[in-house]
Length: 345
Image 1 (cartoon, rainbow, N blue to C red):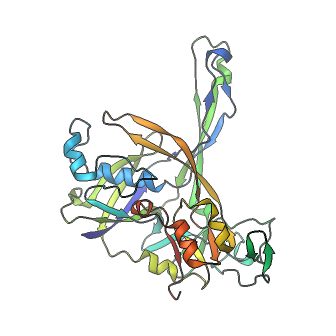
Image 2: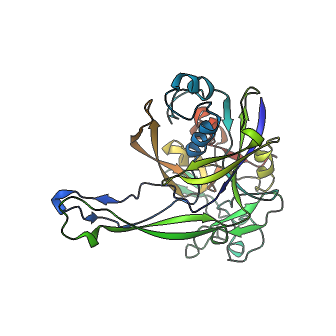
Image 3: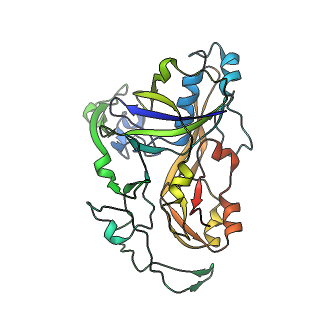
């Protein structure tokens, strides 16, 4: 098997969907838009989106007529979040998403970033160092940091894993608003069917990236470079493959403080994970599975999950129990549930 660094460089604004979708009510309200007429793209693709793009690139036939031949190479089913041990053919696993500029790699800044590093022009990631004494709660002993200011909120930036320098998310991503129209038969007021979508753009010189562990027999694109379309509206990305050792976890662990467990990726964890933590700083992200059928149609899953977002941090009170709540080998196969600690642990 070989490890490859896969770079995905967007060539245009993109739209990665979420659960805050448009809702048109139909003929009973004359096709008018209800709830929200404005939705925003997620900044980054989900791990399942990355796996889907990689599978498409490695498929020998870019159609669903040759289903058996394609399945032999990249597996025969979509990712299922509660499956035990899915096979994706020549793809053995992929890493969590990160961002690159040149040779520099950036991950979401851990949410234990100190206040003075939370400024717009902060230079480096400095973790919390001051915590309270134990506070007894109905869920056991907990602690809090005296360095967090709720008015400032949790930091929104990315950290360079080689030197701890950070860059604000608003310097990495920009947006573009596009207007559309939804017209229904019998509508008497088409103006109320207008809507807006906020697309994202990854600023120049940056690209999305992840590592892929592939069988030696995997047939890579000619010249190790190809086009792939991702997201709603099928935005164009250039995919590049570079054979390279994956040291991402070790490199990230080097920047973490001793007691912190850090979500390198979005993670599906058991709801009682907090019972085995003294401290947590987290954000959540919606996730709904989509399944590609044999005829190429996409089926939307009925269950909506809440993922712990990349960047979230924990201080476990019981490391063994904490690990039990986050370990999921099938999720890790596609880059979810990577929760890492300082390598000195």
